[in-house]
Structure formats: C-alpha cells, structure tokens
Image (cartoon, rainbow, N blue to C red; front, top):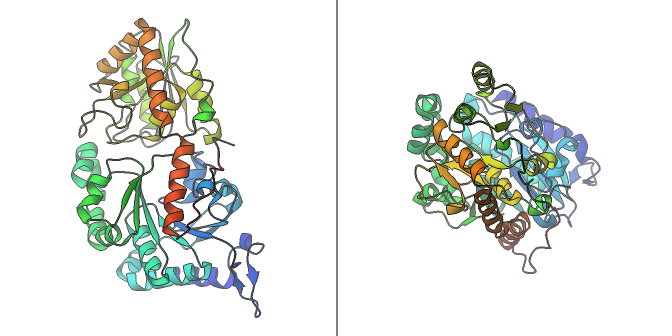
Length: 428
C-alpha cells in the first residue's frame, strides 16, 4: 500500500508532463480542468504499452465521433508508454495517461483505501463519464468513483466471463486463474454489473453471462472495422497457391496448429499467420518439423493502419478459434470480402453475425484442409461467401458502430442534441 500511496502522491503533486499545456492553473498554482472541456476517464483492460507493442493503437478508439475533448487513461500498471506514443486512441481529443501502479496483494486487502485514492485522482479530472473495460477491479474502481462523483459509468465487455466455458476451452491451463476469478466474482463482478449505468458488449455472447446479475442496461456495439479501408476488395485468385490468412493471438483457444497441420493434406495452399503469444514458437517449430517453412509465413505484428493490406492480398481467411462470439479478425475478413473458414461453435448454433455465410468445419486439420481444397476447386463458392459476408458487415460497419456508441454515451451524459457525425474514419 505504501508504494501505491507514493505513486499517487507523486501524480497529485507533479501531475503528468503532457498535461501542463492542457490544464489551466488556479490562483494558487493548482491545475484545474478547463470548464468547457468534455472529459472521459477510462480504465483499459491492459496497459497501454501492450496495445502499442502489438500495433493495436486505433484512431479514436476511446473518442467516438470526437465526443470528448480529453481522454484520461487510468492505468493500473507500473510502467506505461508516453501519451504521445498512443495519442491516436483519443482521436481529435487530447490523451492523458495516469499510471498509478499495479495494485499489490496489500492493496487488494485494503480496497477502501485503494478506491478512495483512485477516486480522489479522478475527482481532479472532473470527468463527464467513466468507462472501464472489464468487470474486475478496473470496473469496480470505475463504478465506485462514478457513484461518488455523480457521473455515469460504462463497462465494456470484450470476452465471455463464464468460468465453465473458459475451463472447457483452456482445460488445466485455466487452473491458476480460476481461484483468482472466484475472488473477482466475490469482490467485484456482482457490484460492477449491477451498478454500471450501461454495459456495452463487443458481441452478443458475453451478455448471456452479464444478464445473470440483472444489469441496468445492456447494448451490443461490435468492434469498429471501417469498410472504407477494404473498399478495393480482396485479390481474386487467378492461378498459383490459395493464400490463406489467419490473424490473432496464438494461445489456448486460438491455437493455429490445426491450420498449419492442414497443409499436409492439401497442396497449392500457403498460410500467413499474423500474431504472437505463448504458442508462437511451438507453431514455428511445428511448421519446420513438417517441412512447411516455405508455405507457412509468420508475422509477429502489423500496425492497425496497415492490417487491411494483408487481407486484400489474401484469398481466404481462416481461424482455429474456440471462443464464442465474433472476433475482430473475422469482422476484418468480412469487410474485405474474404470467404471465412471457422470451426463449428461449441455454444452457438452458428458463428455470430456471419452465420451461414461462413464455411464451418470440425476444427481438425483434415476439416480445414477439406475447406481449402473446396475453395480451390470451387472459386465461385469463395466469391459468393465473400460477397455475402461483406454485405453482412455493412450493417455493422465501423462508421455505423462509431455513431451508435457515441449516441449511447451522449445519451448517458444527458446531451439532448446528440453526438456529431463520425470523425475517426477507417485507418488515418
């Protein structure tokens, strides 16, 4: 706790260097927010340096339609990147990073002090809205501060929090996290789901878990993928190998091994894997052991502003995913007009959003190989599925979702005039 207090005291006494030009100083030298500014406080799910390292800094991610003049990130991390390194997250607004340090076991045992110190920091910012990206300690600090300061709170869900389903996906690898998740359930989740003014989910499935706690209001706003960046459409396959693209973190539940092994059963197919994670090295070793180095290509990361170029060069998208819902790479593939190959979902009758316009397989190497062989033999099938997926994506295009998100947040803040039009565009 002493370390947390010291970090907080440092922030209060010195503030952040990037904020000096943004805050007006009071009569005694104290810094006060400009009264005309509209400010968002956000607790991200991960430290910002992780977004930066993975190339996942998305323009306007926390500022739909330029709704906010300032976006203040409260990071529960011992280290962070400078605000200017990830400034695009605030779009046309100004980004401020308040790194308060990672809570220790002592902090968790004294939650009242942790909550009070965080609320005091947020009070100085004078936000119009507080948002957190999980229902754990981040969400708990957010809703507690919101209640104390009489401002609305929003919790964003980006994954399924059901423990049984997670255990089925991860198996014994989930054991070390299971006990911690029970503590989070007891200490945080119930209060967060019930206290937040709005729960925004990135897809339908997580709401099946959140609904158990009777939240006040829930909405689905799909992850923003701007179709304009993919307007040229994917490259038609005229000859040569079928180019298969797979994007995503390589870990349990998204293990690309079946995709790699599928190439043993089908010729004239090449695979590009974009992503990193604990399974990355074993996947590289697997490709080498199977003699597939010339047909399997690895890219650790690609900047978000450049990712569309890889989709447009591909012929097919495939992902060996076991998590429910719809992930961002599938949305990107739909926007690009690529046929999508995915395993049969475990808990849904068909893949969310893309539905029957996906080529659904059993998730084995042989299943993926059969799908790739079929796409090679039936080029019109790939064109039809790609066009249908693209049509489906238009209903949830990034511009549509940005406007909807801004509308919801504007409504929470009591803005009767509604939000301005989308400003963030595709990948500028």
